[in-house]
Length: 87
Image (cartoon, rainbow, N blue to C red; front, side, top):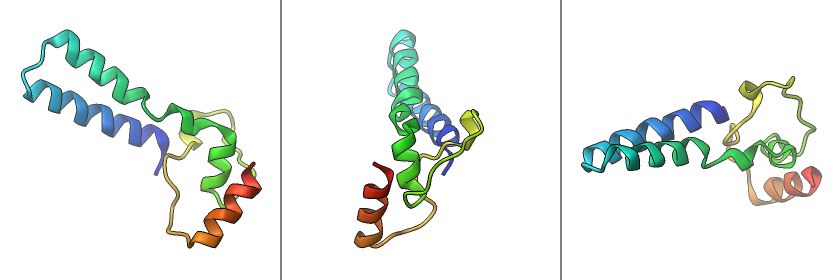
């Protein structure tokens, strides 16, 4: 799952939910901003490497190459190996 797509989706959902709750516009704006930034720590190269099984990452300097979640299920041993390899 691309990180940008994930952040955009969470932001859109949070905005709609906060608006439906009848919150003041300024609070809706704050919640929307928080949602759009909530996973930026996942841009860390070590985390990106872990999502790719511990392989070095190459994002060509663009935000579009970053992931929010891995592409497939891994067993515990594979996840542990990826975590070690990614530092």
